[in-house]
Length: 102
Image (cartoon, rainbow, N blue to C red; front, side, top):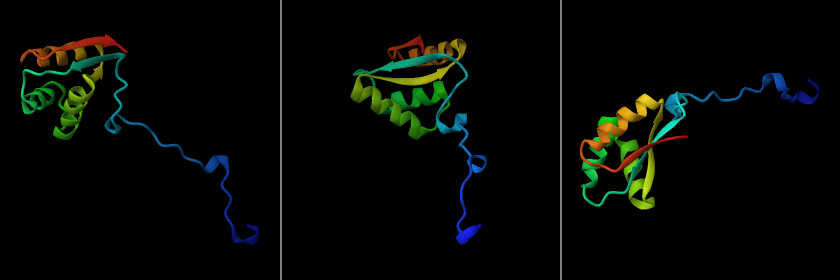
């Protein structure tokens, strides 16, 4: 080590690993789209999102706000069966949703 400096070599670089808890679900190529709704209270939508997705309350609030301000939001991603299950739970209170291939 001339001069007391440490030089980084490509062998020493470590790239971060993406995990599902980082907000990315790579289990399937399908998504559930939630559309803006003027017939339900915001808290009703958040509660139903939590029931359908299992996400924490903060994430459900963020999805609801995105749907409210942008007219739609991706509420869930996963396999075709997981997305259909999620969409059906959201439809229980007549929320407008659709599943689509990502």
